[in-house]
Length: 537
Image 1 (cartoon, helix red, strand yellow):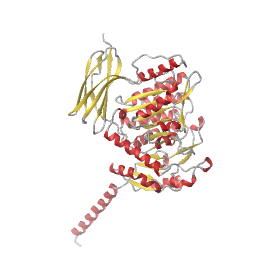
Image 2 (cartoon, helix red, strand yellow; image 1 turned 60 degrees about the vertical axis):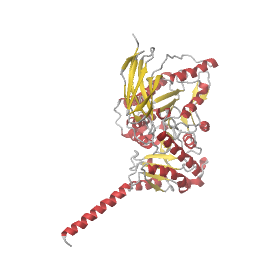
Image 3 (cartoon, one colour; image 1 turned 135 degrees about the vertical axis):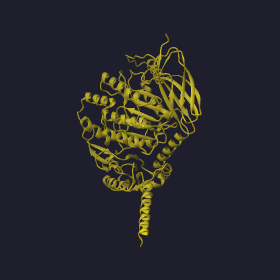
Image 4 (cartoon, rainbow, N blue to C red; image 1 turned 135 degrees about the horizontal axis):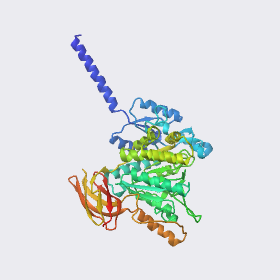
């Protein structure tokens, strides 16, 4: 055969190999799904929705030990460019604990690892963990974002799927106030008045610095001294109200257990629950079901003989769309560093899915240098508590402890950014012009609000009274503390430009923010700018 023809055949063959290789790459799965066969029909709407978004899937068998399932995932990762792992089904029950071993074909097993750090403070000796399913190379640091849809039946799975689809449809078609709302509920640390005050101050600073100013936060705090404490007798109702208002995130910080959160304690010996599993039926998160982040012990104890709080929330039609929580006893430092990583991933890096935010935070627990100011502060506080001296070990243990009970492919739907221009300082009683740039068209809410670490009024509560008249005033103070908006106007966004004028009240002074929230058919947008208001001479 002539040389030219031979080279031509070789070139054609090379091109064919490249094309075949390229086609294989184009169709490579990014998500591995561990799903019992009887559940696959209920999962089909979710698969179709995710495929329309550009995801593709490879299924692996759920039978056998956790090590066997992981081996199948590792094998699949060698043929596909995996980023996510979705586990569909609860954990096989332990007959000794009252579990249901006869339905093991509908379950996905989990790993149980020895505890090295939290056992020092009375935690269990073992940790239930799905982390190894995302750890492809065995170094304990995950490469895949793992989430578990803890359904016990096809009917429960169908309900969870419909919640996920409805949540993303709502986020794509409308926003309203919920899309930039972060609800925070905090228990009391119980380390003493001075230590608790320091921890509260530190937590508020991280929230102030970490969550951008355009996001509206509320605080519900279980300390009777705090202006953020409602009538203690109505604390449970206040927590439910915050959840039912809807939001981007619902964050709980405090003590927890598999079936509930902490209690509010008052000096007269009374105590009132913050929330427990019996309250889940009262959840009606219709206006934007939040992602619940439970920075507490055991709220995601998903391998117990009874379902945990996180599982109940996920399975309830009116509950959060996903829950992040610990499977066993957790520790404040490990939770704090995890929260730090999630805040950075969501609001600074703006990672698009909950799984990517979750994965980034886990990897940062182990791989981050911890030389920034926030990390140094957290490390210093952890050292001051003097529980143990191996902080890296605690961070690594929390990689195994913290779990996503929900869909790792869930799109967070953060508002698009608005570039805001406003004076950096102004005088009380004056009028300022606020300008915004945004490619979306719609109506924009323009607000002037005091910075979220400040109050619009003076507050000092030194003594506790159990009298009804005194406790009723707590509710009034609580509502005022969570209302930082001083004044607001509405303006239209036209041609990519927003223009509004705000009149500053004559009695206002101190650090404030101008906040913009745009409602558009294409989705929400938000932005903010700092402004310092000085008193009129």
